Length: 102
Image (tube, rainbow, N blue to C red):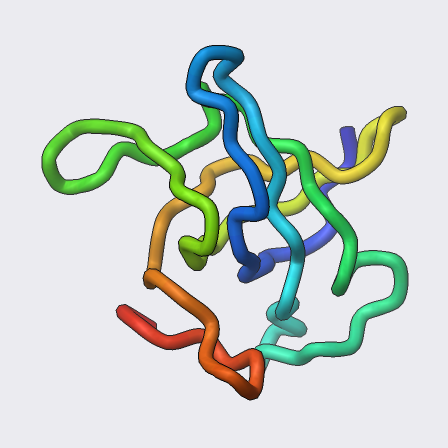
């Protein structure tokens, strides 16, 4: 797998019983700022495995639809995969901006 970039996104689904889900990429860090345009990444869905979720302060790993995340995106043979995923907020606002703990 090849590392692509640092991303922020929103959890679109997570199946606890199967230990995987998907995050939609909303922003990419270009080295100096967060941007909403990055070909073939922003707007794409990244696969997330349970093992790649960083535990929260309480030590638990949990993802809920709508949570805002930050992660490193990798491109593999089946598409984007999210690694080192951490929760940074609860929802995107009406303009699509990250709100919460940024």
